[in-house]
Length: 123
Image (cartoon, rainbow, N blue to C red; front, side):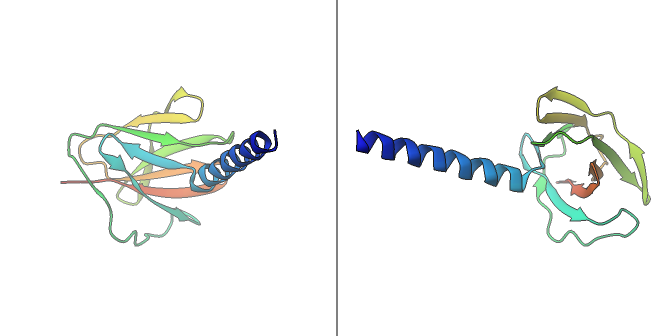
């Protein structure tokens, strides 16, 4: 009996740790060929050095965002230092999708008061 109780305690602790990890890395954006580069920013008025960005296939048209929270999510594509709204579709709870045109590479994602830059560079 003691062995079974110990096993359940370990399972519960592991699930709590996984949940905390997911909450800490959320939001995360990805395409079919990998994770999209992300940087949290204070505002969108400055250009930020995002460092090395991951390369993606030029055929990527859909970007998905996983966000475990309940604040409003909005996405803008950036062109010439200006943000233009992108239609965001809620696929299921905590999963959002937006379409990317061929030369779109920088996106502004706002979740509540938090702001993020996501970049996708095609090869």
